[in-house]
Length: 302
Image (cartoon, rainbow, N blue to C red; front, side, top):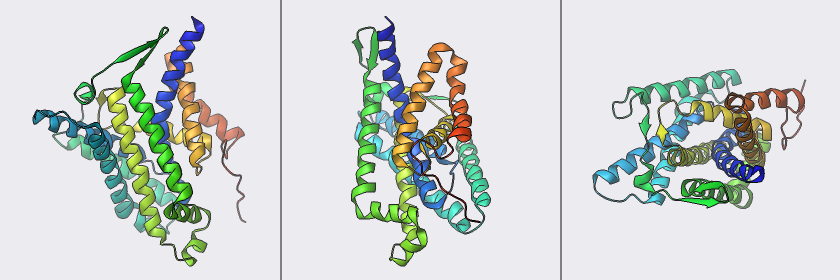
């Protein structure tokens, strides 16, 4: 019985870790290039969830069955657009100002997105039920005593495909090479003819698109959304990025799955422990391994 129970935990841990991974990658990409901790990133995830919600409701109103891929593209596009505009309007003017200014601005952008969304009558401050069954009819599969739903399968499959595509872009394309060069040394990259601002825009777009996809996957798996839904997952995804080594894409993925498993196993012991374990991990990492699992040690120039 114990081993079967562990199988259910493994399924749930992978599913939760997949959502964290899609969000944490955006944190780590942006930080890797401009050393900005973008605390508004969790709200790009919220925007993606609402974009998917309205896309599904629009199709239902027209008596049409929504196409999952189209809804996914809509959620990713919404996240990407909001991320791009946030960079252009709020972060770009502060590019060469003290880092604290950009950090405070990121908090302001986050609150602006949350409260503005709440003030829009079509959204409002209350929870809304995400129409998951209108998008994908539910099916469950029993593996022994463990239960695997098709929502979890979609969640994990989409996350893995998007992470593979991202890895290919970063490692094997010209723009990915430019991103890595910019992260290593922006001044040298600029001298080599790389348009740094274009690369930063592209980085925000990629991160926002992945966060938007995570919003849709969350709506499918946990069918309840609200304008403040990005606060806690965004914070936990940031912790996952720190755990893996912020600035490292593989580290963000690894940290996310470790955090997902930790939460699931913590919940099996005590629900409060499961909710708080992420913050305990953050404290321990900052004390004993500040560079993270796959991060590089850096020294301060004096």
